[in-house]
Image 1 (tube, rainbow, N blue to C red):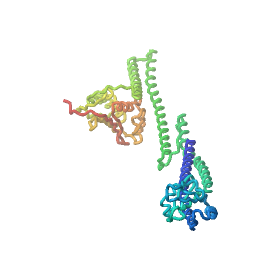
Image 2: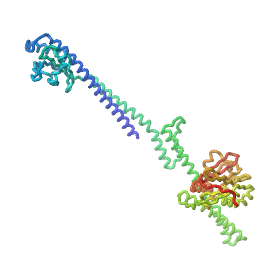
Image 3: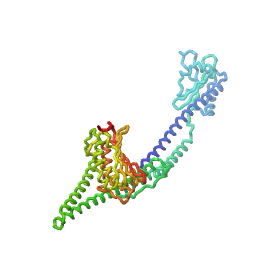
Image 4: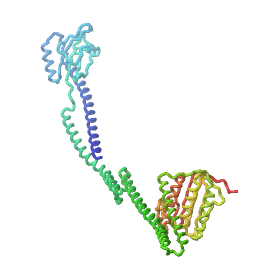
Length: 463
């Protein structure tokens, strides 16, 4: 990156100098041509006036040449010529002294020249001008022609400009090196941090930029820090997942092994009770493995759903009624507002029952005395709310409620039962059916877990 920035800065300076130099040369050339043409025109008029002494075309030829040489040297002219222009165009122009090569003699038959005007121009790096010695008199018309070299108005300044350009390039190189280092340093630091993170060092953090900094580099630092925090949290959840699953696997396996060994040794006095415990623990293992498989299939998008219009009110009521004994045992009053309401939605009935069961089971775990399950229709579909009167959830924890193995802080002494994957499965199933799920809560005010599904509607009470 530093090399590219350095190349870009130096290239920009060189292009700027080249454009500036070209512009100066073009403008100075135009100015030099205009200046030389104006000066030559004035000098041609002055030379014509100097020769306007009434001499004929053939008289005092030698004296005229001497005067022309003196004038040429004094005015710094390249050449002074003189011609006679007959009035008759068929008669050739008579050259009295050599004419500057930049002038076409045929252009001297201009009526403007005979009227006293001055002709001038710039050709092949030479400025020329023509003026009549005897304007307004009878032909032939005597015309003086002068020429001078067009000089560069910059002169010695060209060397100074070149020196200034070299100094500017040197300054640009130094500035580019400094600026590229300053600009590239945050990116280099971010790259080094990313490499350390990729190597497993999740304690790596970039300096947090001030809140007033909103440029791309500051956003990159914030994004990288947020990514590391997310990875660190994911690693913690993964560690918690392994610990939780290991514990949940070891507990029933230990129980099954102990009772099986007792039965094998003949020391078990009540084989039927041992068999019942072994069956219960094996069912617990089956639920754990089933939850893990379901979540893995949902993550891999290999979970198939049999979606069809169904009366989810009846399904929801049946699931809630199935938890009545557990609620009674926990001392929780379980209420439902779906008994007389028929609500149709496009869902997988079995998976919807699993969603409701997981939500109710979670609510019973945290409710103090009451748990309400409400199924209603909305303008866009249906809504299921499972509300408990438990201790509530902190605002910082709300976004993480449906993460797998989320450990709520609302009641630290209550552990996750089973695998701790119930709410994570709820979220994945609801999303797979095109819905959304969220948690609404405040500390000390209970919690509502809300599921929304599109489509469906109410057809009134069952007959």
